[in-house]
Image (cartoon, rainbow, N blue to C red; front, top):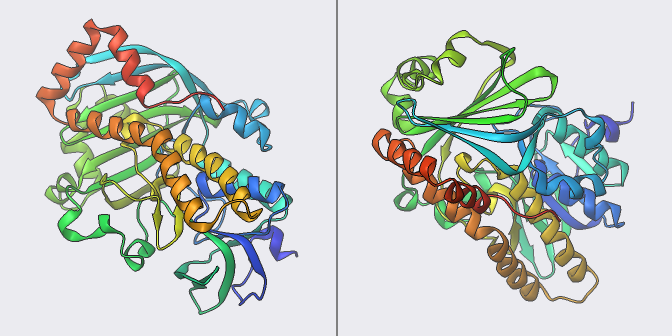
Length: 391
């Protein structure tokens, strides 16, 4: 059995100097690995879990990413994925807005997509180390040293952080947003799949409840992704029981209640993550280049986190090639990436954060939805703020 194919590579110190080390194997890290490996670069990617596995995610990819994914080898046309062209949002009391999605999106599970991308990266020569947790990363001179659990070390010219919304390395690198005095409100997110026989295959639904909102969208296999985010106080107020919180809080929305009461859960148990914050993050810390949620977390109501991760990987790849070819210094790389990332994605995150402030509060949400129903042009513009152009 070839461990490079199965992903069961045991962590061991490596004398090789990689061009790029990527910490985190979600869509941002994996798409960056694929691009670099396709260009002949020596890439090592560390993922603490083992593929395939489920993640907390809305599993919605904006069509802006379609051409990019096809170019790097993802056979989207062969996967028979649902295409979403409509959007519904409701207030906690059930007042609803229905609107077309301009660019639209695809539904695909992370269980399928992440494994597919990891396979592509390996096929192009990337080293993917699954079940491997990075405990430290530091730059000395022009070389990063990455230490993994167990003590083995790896070395690379570039280190990229793609570890998601929260990781121990955030504290290790002393990233400002993790300071207790700066965290602000904290949220918990839950995700599972439902079997809803009559759920439309062309719609995204977003149903608000007190201090949170729940998204429903189709994925392959006839399943419906159910993922929601709630102020952590809702969970604590109900004995830290997800089921009780759903009964007492989420099901107060009359449009959401039938799905949660009547639909059968499919496959895996609910996945829960906590300590989510929407505070602004930096794109570079201790010379590690951040992308995906590690660089900035968009409110789930905007429904476009995966797309933003891929946008950042495409943007960063071009700059990394210039650095590795000797056309950019490290300070120039960091400055240009920070500037380009902000120009491309900061407005989308800010828009998501602003929208997030309106929703989850019954009165404000109802007023906002009633206003948007009378102003369809404004609704279109709001949706455009959270999506980009094909690239």
